[in-house]
Length: 180
Image 1 (cartoon, helix red, strand yellow):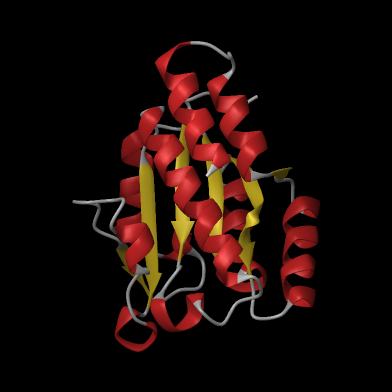
Image 2 (cartoon, one colour):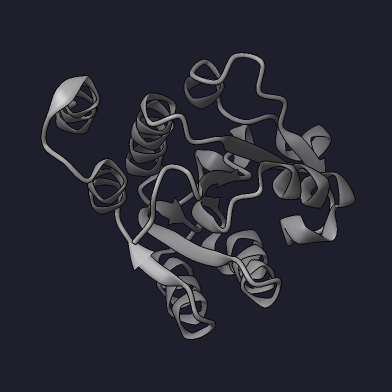
């Protein structure tokens, strides 16, 4: 079970040119936005990465607007773990459970997830918050990530698992986010 004190939310490469070309891009954007807002309510740190932003553009505005002051980690390696700045930032939070969302499922999300597992992190892949340009590659990526040892979850499943109880201000805030 994931808990707010042990979890970090990782958003991989949801960038302008690429983000609009993936399968069900609107669903991915909506679910990642919900997760960002829920993680903020639950005080869960969020790390954003960008693959070659000069060529692919920056993280899409609807997500970055929710993250003022959060500077994405730029990378050239497909796996986030291949970037020293990312690894330093990740380790600084001292969190072992990584909630993973982003694009593309079969490339950067896959390679990052496998390396995180190899480094001893518990990867929780948010299956309705990842995508690829084709549905087939999305499905293949999810399958391979699960076979590598990740747990599969969904936006609502993760949020309510992190919340744990149906009471208080956090529950009210999370319920509002989920219903939107």
